Structures are given as structure tokens and as C-alpha cells.
Amino acid sequence: MTADVVIIGGGLHGCSAALNLSRRNLSCIIVEKDHVGRHASSANAGGVRTLMRDPREIPLALASLDLWHDMQSLVDDDCGFEETGQLRIAETPEDFETLRKRAELVKGLGHSHEELIDEKELYRLLPHMRPGCVGGLICRRDGSGNPLIAMRAFRAAVLKAGVTLHEGVAATGAERAGEGWRVNTTAGPVEAGMVVNCAGAWADRVAGWFGDHITVTPAAPMGMITARLPHLVGPVVSSVSRYLSLKQFENGTVLISGHLRGDADRDRNIAALKMGDFAERARTVLDLFPQFSQAQVVRFWAGIEAITDDGSPIIGPSANSPNVIHAFGFNGHGFELGPKVGAVVAEIAATGGTNTPLDGLTIHRFLDNAKMTATQMANSEEIKIAQG
Ligand SMILES: Cc1cc2nc3c(=O)[nH]c(=O)nc-3n(C[C@H](O)[C@H](O)[C@H](O)COP(=O)(O)OP(=O)(O)OC[C@H]3O[C@@H](n4cnc5c(N)ncnc54)[C@H](O)[C@@H]3O)c2cc1C
Image 1 (cartoon, rainbow, N blue to C red):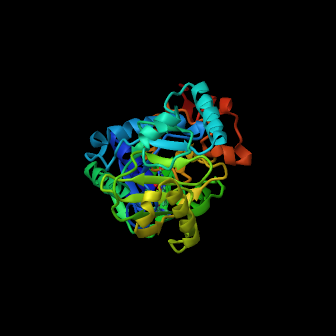
Image 2: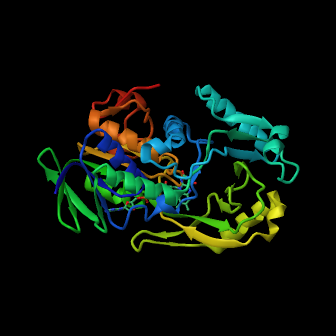
Image 3: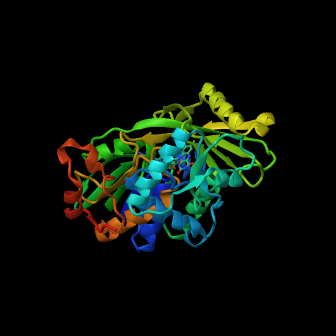
């Protein structure tokens, strides 16, 4: 079987890349070892957050947020997106000083999406939170989507676009075939001019087939959700000094996550839960919102995700092989980035470069034999980054 591009991994990023490649009239095959959205892309907390992004990710995250606001036109479904805002609260004056410095940094980079708010505005937005907090930092256009609805919509859109989808088929290796690649799979070889590596927590193994020998740490972010409660919280809430992400949906259920980590076993496709960490997160929620003391938690879960050494994803061409593009290592915050990363991957595949700055995000930063400065990268033949 042949195509212009073979994509390894059918999560949000693989599907988004396929959709955008199809829009550029490039034929695609997705090879997915389980089924579309089986892993992180359906298991996540749905946070659509540009707030507090690593500066390297801000241009991508802002562009992706625009796509979330217009999701209907991309996949014929709003993917459950709600613009609630994402708000990080300062519980102490020291926390507020941290946020003030952050706001200054982001402003200095030329962005205006993060807004420092005082105590009065904080309690206008969160009137039911316990007293004593001093302010916050908000991205008002942020919000959340529904990962299950999103993956169903992306899968349908990919099929409608004519992408060939092989589910239950694992890629097992790759070798050169003329100018392109032969990807071996459990259902036989697939040949393509180009390979896109969207293999999530398994993607470092795939990268190794192309000479890009790095490691990611598989992790198991966890979440829990309550039965319906009186509606008390509008924005998605996090805190400066304590791990927390709390969002209350329109129907009253409350999703609690935020740096909760179980144990990931990527060889067995298993993520094991750690109950003690859930208990600690529940105590934080009750401290901030004592009205939730009667909440019943109805479901706990975890998914498998790739963590990189510097907490930011790997996006862009291979350092050691031609016609290979990586998009993985999303560190528990790749759901928001999915729509734009797919567009960037397709742009690189079709044109050899991208207008979205990828400074400090390509795999080169982790490879001793291929360390490049930002300037070298900008001038490189492989990727022509148009800043701004
Ligand atoms: C509990 C939890 C909460 C999260 N909350 C948020 C949030 O609120 N906001 C946010 O932005 N992000 C969040 N994330 C992170 C987000 O879900 C991920 O960053 C994103 O879904 C990654 O998408 P992906 O397509 O790269 O990976 P995945 O969805 O994991 O897809 C990778 C796919 O590759 C396949 N694959 C691997 N190896 C092979 C192979 N050899 N052959 C064929 N197929 C292969 C896998 O089976 C898998 O389906 C959360 C994650 C979890 C687990």
C-alpha cells in the first residue's frame, strides 16, 4: 500500500495532521496500533489552555485556540468547546507576586492574552470560593472541550477526507525505499514519501528508527469526576502554590486533575491509579470550595502520555533522516495544541517550512550530535521558520 504520507499514531495529533494533509491534497495512511483516540487523546481532562504556557509554545497555543473557537468549520462539530476562561489563583501575596512577574514576562514577549486581576475581579468571577485569596491571572478566551466528542469528530472528519485508517495495526520499523520510506507494520509494509511520527508515549521508539535517539518518560496523568453538584464555578481554576485543575461543566459535574500521576506501563498499555494523590487533590478542592464537601466521585481514570526532559513537545523535522516529521511529547497539555500542530505538520510536509515559530521545539535540542542554535535553525534548509 502506498500514499504520500504515512502517519504513525491515531491520537488527536495524528488525526489532525491527516486532516490538514488531506486539505493540501496529500494522500495519507494512519497506522494505529489500537483504535483512534484509545490513549491520551480521549482520556484527557479537556483543558483548552493557553494560560502559563512555556514561552516557546505560546505562538502555537494562541493559533490553536483560534482553531478551537472555530472548530465547527474544521471537523463539523464544536467538540464540546466552552469558552469559560482559565484562571490561576493567587492564595497569598507571594503567589500574586509570582503572577505579576509572569504577566510582565508574557507582555514583554509581545502577548496580551494573560491578564492579571485583583481580588475584586477574582471574587466577581469566583463568588463561591473561600475568602482570603488575593488575585489571579486569567486567559478569558481559554476554556475546555470534550475529548470523547473531539476524537469522534476528528475520526469522522479524517474518514470523510479520504484518509486510509488502519486500526489495530502497529508500525514495527522503517527502512528507506527510494526517496521515501517503507514502514513495516503488523499488517504488512506501507510505502510513503514521508513519515509523520505522532506515536504519543511510544514515539521515542519510533524516532529511534530514523536515527533520532532520544527518550521520553511515559507518565500516567489521572483525573476524577463527581456526580452533578450545584453550579458554583465558571472558569477552569488552578492555583500558583498547589497542584490543581478544577472545572465544573454546565451539567454540574466537577472534573478534578492537575499534575496527578499514576504509573504508566506502555508495554502493556496500562495506566495504574494512585489513590493517595486523589485524596490530596480532593482536600485542596474542599479547602477552596467547602460547599463541595458532599460531592460524590463517580469515576477515576488515567491515560498514558509522553513527558520530555524540558516539559515542552517535540515538533518538526527529524534531525537525522529526510522526509520525517515528529509531533509528540506533549507533557499533559497537548489537547489544546492538537488543531494547530496538525496544520503545522502539514505545512512542513507540503512546503518544507512553517510560518509558526518552532524555536526550541524541534528534536534537535535533545540530540548532542545535532545541537543547533535558534539562528542556525531559522536558517536551516530543513525548516525555514518565518518569525512573527
Ligand atoms: C488524564 C489526562 C489529562 C490530560 N489533560 C489535558 C488537558 O486538560 N489539556 C490538554 O491540553 N492536554 C491534556 N492532556 C494531554 C493530552 O491528552 C495529550 O497531550 C494529547 O492527547 C496527545 O495526543 P497524541 O495524539 O500525541 O497522543 P495519543 O493520543 O496517545 O496518540 C498516540 C497514538 O499512537 C499510537 N501508537 C503508538 N505507537 C504506535 C505504533 N508503533 N504503531 C501504531 N500506532 C502507535 C498509540 O496507540 C496512540 O493511540 C491530558 C492527558 C491525560 C492522560
